[in-house]
Image (cartoon, rainbow, N blue to C red; front, side, top):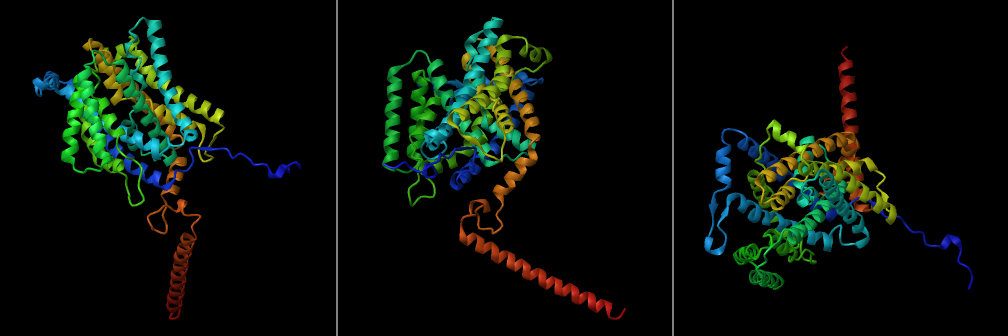
Length: 471
């Protein structure tokens, strides 16, 4: 058989990392992050309000309200306000996270195993390295290793709020990377909560929760409609999950994963996307801010802040968020890109990945939750760990702000090019470069502008000649 000419050999095309998103993915991302940004600002306001409330003469009322119990004791649900916020409201947050994860797995960045490998590896490294940093600090310093999971989380809403305050508009590829990191982060955070912070399981209640969840799934598959069907059933699933001993937020993720997130030909949105669109504002605008209000109220006196950097538990949290997150995500991304031979988008640079990795060190909401679970028997240490989460998140935000501002002009140029829509058809021009109709529309627009300028030139010339005559 004759040898094949060298020129006919197939050439492997390197995959591009952080390349341009497909238009549907970009549209979904923009809508989701817009809501999360507003929610992030509300989260910041709630956190500041909690700190003020807990560090003024009104601090006694803060503790009184947070510890106020309500709910049916006969159902095992006579909980404090703070407990309702952590176990109840955050279930809504994790429900949205479950839908996001399902969508990413079936229609988003995680659908293609090759494309998913890089952000998944980056997210896993971004959780493993902070945990190792925490363990190292506490083994050397003689502290408790129970809080190893506290610095593993990323708070996407808080991170987006920082971007909004800075006025930094990241290119869609970087925003998608940050969101994918957060989605994978949420998945493993809920697995950590379910596996490591569950004790004394009531198997009867757990079986009831799974049975109710199966009914939830069955009704969805039969396309039964009506909030009055699903909301009561969701409350039953949540209540049974809570009484089973498994953290109740697991119920939220489980229900989110049952939704269909693939669009049919006649659908503009899948049921999962539609429900997420309805529930996300409730999660970002109410559930998470209220959780922050009743969880972030810790003492920030000079002594308390000094203790953050002297106790091994709190120092491990701060270093885990600030150093561990940045090194873990950046190092994981670089290694994954190297071994998968993925090439970074030519419009971006590795310092951009470092900036986003540092921004991911903001671990507010889930870190506070895990901190409460890890040190539930020691209220004093719980508050100190919460202060460490706040401190580490603020430091990570400041460092990320500095790194992002160094490249803000590049981001602005890329963002503007992605948003430009000169033919005003609702689709960014960058997505229409291969469409002949787009170029014909642009030609007509430019011809109309040229005709208008010729008319204005003739008018200006006539006006000048008329003015010059009498002179």
